[in-house]
Length: 125
Image (tube, rainbow, N blue to C red; front, side, top):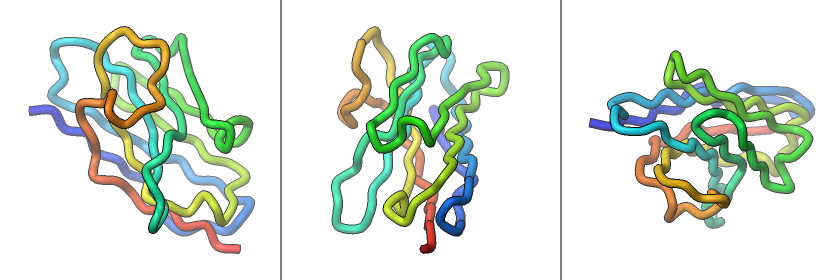
């Protein structure tokens, strides 16, 4: 059974940093692309970034570029989202997802097969 579990959320002041982790288990048939999304109250879930299974291709949303860094450790089946220079508008529930296949664009939620339960990130001004 595939499980995706996020951790590391919390409350931080504007300008601060947080590192989210995403542990994937039960995936034995292929290496997935891992994506990060977020959803603020009353808004749609939006793409934050993604990393291909080998780490060779990383994509970021415009809002994340330059402030967030995605990395992965396949020996631990874990993906990380380092968030620096956080802003109040980064407040949201952050979700991690696993997707399979050979695609050039992983920015759409429908492309992912497994999702975590989300972790809350709150940035105070």
